[in-house]
Length: 347
Ligand SMILES: Cc1ncc(C[n+]2csc(CCOP(=O)(O)OP(=O)(O)O)c2C)c(N)n1
Image (cartoon, rainbow, N blue to C red; front, side, top):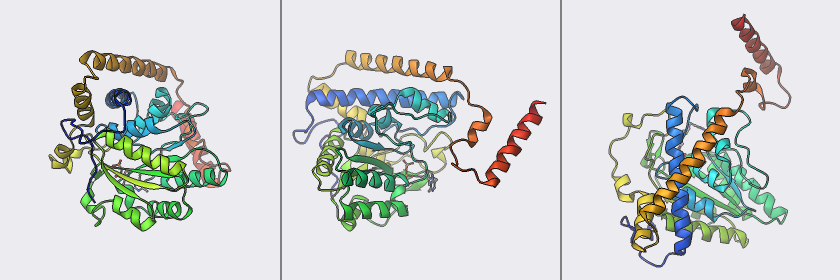
């Protein structure tokens, strides 16, 4: 299977892209916005102002193209890697930051923004997405589901069960794999003996597409086609977007311990740079617009950080909330022991 691409590394299109210049400009603005957010969040973690963070630098083309292709009636089912797509889909910035600060009531989307909390257990979101899709289909409701996952997730049972079910029941789901080359320290060639994740779609009876994930115009086109297929009742699609995780897996990872300079990164280039070069060549972008976009992003993010830091600190026992509906005795004992220890420490 050949990897599909519209823009080369210099931003030269091989054919007419589906996105208009106006849509492509909106895409670049969104990518610059989330890149600014990502680097700010990383700094906040290094300063000890949020607890942990999973950066997505290098994956902005996928996340922005996907989020901007969704409608209000659609559902987004993200993982911890997808904060960029989540905020573009309508999750307030302060909610995203509060999640990474560990505040228990965070990641709340406003009414009408259909997003699930980010899945941390790998691939568990895949059956959830399929279940939502099946529910929409049974209830004859408008809307389709888009879910993200990594290359590592494709080795989990949940991936197989989810895609198999989706294929059989033709659920309206787009499975968007961000193959960033690494599952923490495990390289892609140790993940599967198949030539790609996309070819595995055949085994589930759905179309599979292998695309260049650092080509934002290609991602937008493939995602829109898959969404249209799902909307028209034809069922799911598996898209594998090849990309590169520029930063660490999370802020508790040091990639220098397991990876050196990687030719895969050079082969894909930078998604922001590729789209910017395209728009500059088309006369549809300028240094002034870039600066205005970044200034706007910095202002919005600074506002969200101020809101975050004005939020009340949760009480220590909040860690026990939202775990069980009916608390089992062992859980209650742990909670009581914790509260007792807290009292003694204060005395
Ligand atoms: C079920 C499960 N097993 C193991 C882990 C530990 N873990 C966290 S992230 C990760 C790698 C995931 O890699 P991938 O699916 O490629 O996504 P990426 O983080 O690269 O976006 C692992 C093994 C987990 N969170 N859940």
